[in-house]
Length: 139
Image 1 (tube, rainbow, N blue to C red):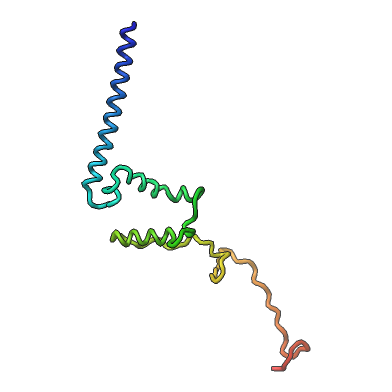
Image 2 (tube, helix red, strand yellow):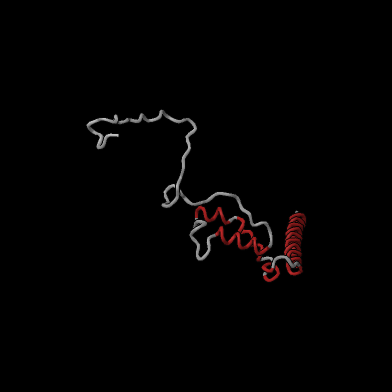
């Protein structure tokens, strides 16, 4: 019975060692690929760790929604301007969707036109007769 328990513990340690070896080999493979590639200088200078930066950039909107700042609060450039600069520098498509994150309804100097699907009754216009005592000059 003791031999069976010892054999099981040895097998567990061996499978754990194999898993750790496979993980180390995977990290070494990613590092070698990062060092040899020419597309991203960040990955070439900081192999393996550079992927963390891209991961955080990918989940950035979710983090900023609750934790940090909005898209327009950073200085000297907003996040949208920085995104346009990065894509232009890479030579990729720098056209982004139409729209804004800003609250234009409470901002000054923005004309906001609101539409209604089902309009209510039109207000009655009261006209003053041409020769009324309320009229200043006759027509």
